Image (tube, rainbow, N blue to C red; front, top):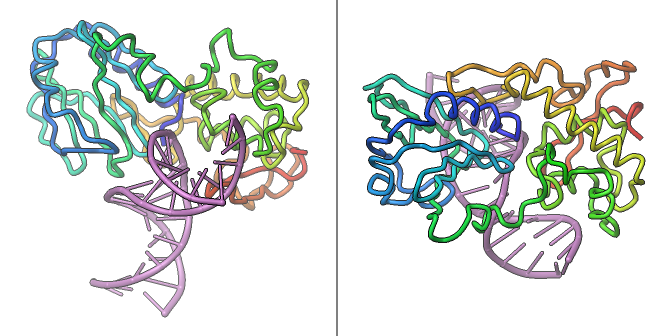
Length: 274
DNA sequence: TCCATCACCTGAGCGC
DNA sequence: TGCGCTCAGGTGATGG
């Protein structure tokens, strides 16, 4: 499922294949995904050039002269470039038809994704309701142990829940939260408000390292994710704990434990993580 | 303000 | 083989 690394891999693919190209048409095959798909996308985008591909958290932002196409891949979404005339498969919900007839195609079986439009006349895209409340980017200068420490004082939720909430740091989903907490040696159930600054420093370093490594490996393909050329990622081969319940810890050999937190699976090593 | 829970959705996997 | 159930999980809405 797409987290920050997967969206970043997609963004790079879109930047390479689509930026600078002109949109000829938009074909939406479903009226809504998580939210209604704007019905006037074809009128808005036909004849417009894709100026840039940005990412904010797990949102992909395709910039046009008049605004931004906001795409969220949800849990099962993927974007791929298809040859002209390629017939849609089941769950191919939306095509951007480019000037040469090739297609930027959104595939999303679970339909938890979203396609939205933010008009430039309504202000910068960062002011969009879905983006305005997001926390800092983990690769930005604003991201630090001090920020994490300060933002979680007094919070009784678990440290993993604090990472997933997205109001402090963005882009860390269920997989990478478990992996980063393992690398930092912090048990996921620890109350966020009781984590000391030195441990936040280890966690901040681990978050950056885990996400960077995942991007280098093309993301994770644990279930649905593929890149814009249909390629799988390889990070899942390097997971220390995620989806490894009962298997020996790669560091100490202790059996990896699986628990439920807020209806989500959490994996950790009871020996390495305290 | 913070936190927990629910809802949305479909495919895979499992037991019967 | 087919049916029904559970699980997977990102995130907004809701209520305590």
